[in-house]
Amino acid sequence: MKSYPIYKGLQKPLSYKGLHGKFIGWGAASLVLGLLLGGLSGALINIYLGSVVTVVSIVALFVFIFYRQRQGLHKRQRDRGIFIQPSRLKLNYENRKKDI
Image (tube, rainbow, N blue to C red; front, side, top):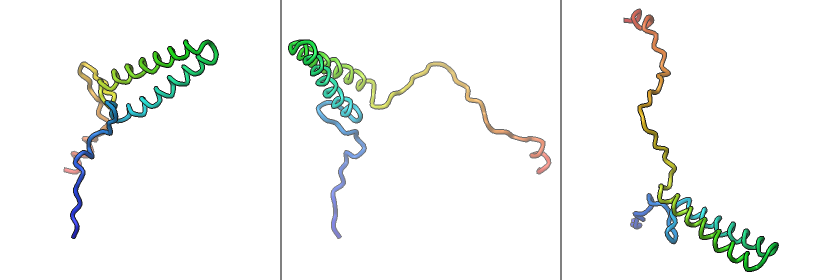
């Protein structure tokens, strides 16, 4: 009977260059979006302006991604206060007394 080693990191999120989980896709999308914005502005207005727009947009999007990543992989809503959930159970006490 063969024995295979078990990878212990299966419960950890995927990480690449400081980005974790879903933020890897966000990072790839921000690179593509920054290149598209820079290419369009470079073609339409000026090539130097296009390069500045490319760098600024990619840096700004990555700053936003790292800010959102710091809040956690899952968006958690933290409400303060006491919340009372209404009961949806319908207890019929009259029928219950007859059964006893």
